[in-house]
Length: 310
Image 1: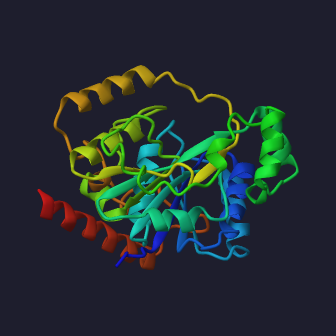
Image 2 (image 1 turned 180 degrees about the vertical axis):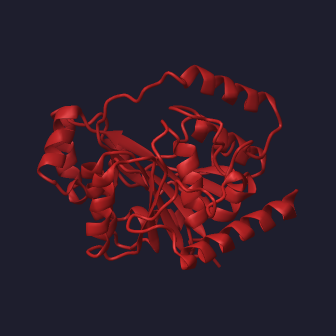
């Protein structure tokens, strides 16, 4: 009998409240709502906090906000912190500028399977169309294939086929050990498996390769890749290229991991102390006693799980 997990969306963002708003509204239009959504905020200013406060009372699902000080690109750390705050059995990592379609969560739940992580895919919008979508608050997650066909021919999007749906059950496990191309902007994994490898490695600071490192360690630990192609596409809004001054350093870190037999992140979930880290706060208040108790339980579970596998 297939296990139907409780599901937590972990939504990474940094100073892009207009895009974040669209993604949060798209999650509210799901055929199956998330059990919770956690905005993993890598140091945004007050505009993002205020947006979340406003939407929290309007949305039809629980919305949490974890935040860290702006000390550069630290996506690995904020994702780990959000994962510790998650209550779901299954985590879906999504970027705050990647818009899901109404069947996104339902499809992720159907693809969730013990011993596997799921890697989705995306289509990219161009700069001009992205501006129009955000300026006019267009509900692109409700667009039909005919509408997307038109935008493709107008060169507003780079691809069309990923938006189609096909039953590719036999294909989905055809490349279980391929780590190339798996992106954390659309990525599903059982929380216990994420904890088992100590989450993302926070040694990766700045843009690049923290998701590849995670996938290599998962595959090495016996958690294999399942394709989400033609099932869970997202629409990636245009943005200027991130600063890539750390790319060379991060690539060297990744190459070291490839040559090693490492399973666990050097600096990962077990390094996060949510109760002494003054950077962390909710969007509306400092962490309460109830929040601390909840997060302590999660951290204890994570530590217990790591002890079992060591």
